[in-house]
Image (cartoon, rainbow, N blue to C red; front, side, top):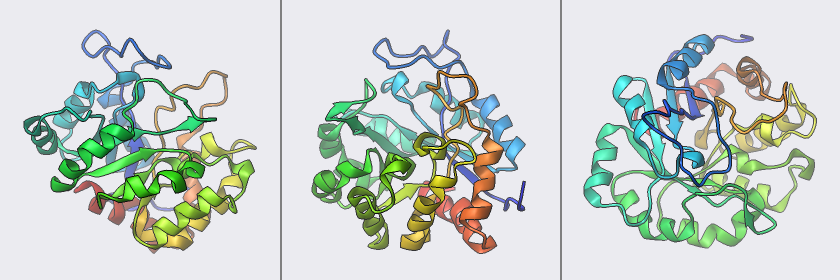
Length: 281
């Protein structure tokens, strides 16, 4: 590593899959990832010198959070989770998820040309139904959305007054540039303390590939907007890649922070303090 990773550092966005004999994928899914369980994720954290991790139920699992919950039971001190739940979930089940370490619910609003990119996500109607109950439990809503769609949906997303966490820097294609109206809107939400974002997905957002130099202006704009509202993640195990050589090196992703945040104190804030506050470590 190009810097000393601070104690308590967190990978705030990752997934686990399987074992499929016990936790099968949803029949209605957009991709089929290989098995990667909790122990493999812990090995990933240890390899990078990270202490904590946040697991997010992926769309290929639908609203079946069982393998994520098993990981929480195995590593309760090191892991928290963001689950996928639907509007008809009962209060007792929500409470049980909270007790097991779930701190947020993910909503899939990511579209291209008005069409959903991934099947089997939980959408805006479920968000509207669930938001008051999530807020009452201190959960946040993790929003998988293209930043250019934020201005239109913001009134609905902001109305309940619960914390919003926008995935992967708004899934901005770097070729659109930091002056994109949707990205600038995301920056304003951070500056006003109305949302968080994950400075993750450099490998998804880049137009030029590793080591992702075109992502630096986006990360730095978000840091300038409000460093107190940022968390970082790898998106391990980098699902839905089809070409050999596309899967990023997690060490490269972590080393990007040396350029994005040369100040040790800012890195600690993003890697340790912010996720501790957001996820309740």
